[in-house]
Length: 152
Image 1 (cartoon, rainbow, N blue to C red):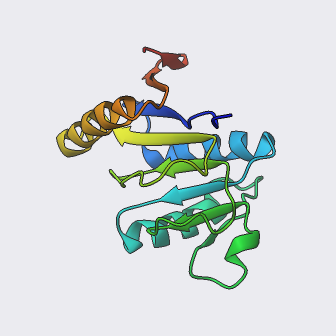
Image 2: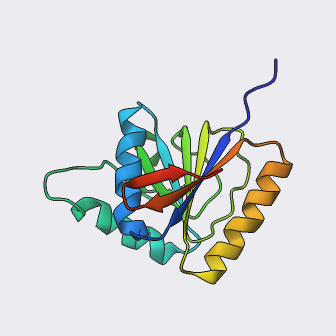
């Protein structure tokens, strides 16, 4: 029996930036009982997210760590630029145009891109085409005034 292909959800950010959207999506992921990997292109983004996820909201705690810290495999949310799935995550988050790599280990891949950035838009379009061609079910979510709306 073939494994179900990883679903890919594209989130087109227009009204809020990554710093506002990512923690909310990570909280929903953890609430499902899933673990997550957040893959960025640059180590600087990993450092930024590491400090941001500690402080984005006073009343909440989002357990996470960069992949190069001891005990990374036990973390519910792992921040990395690497392609491995050290913490056996169910969800992969791609930010800043990070490459998906192999999606077999994941249930869902979430591609977050800034709709106001032409480079990120172009990367997201090419990832959409490539992942659809590989047989991954893909959906496109656009940020509206009342929240996220599935467009495709």
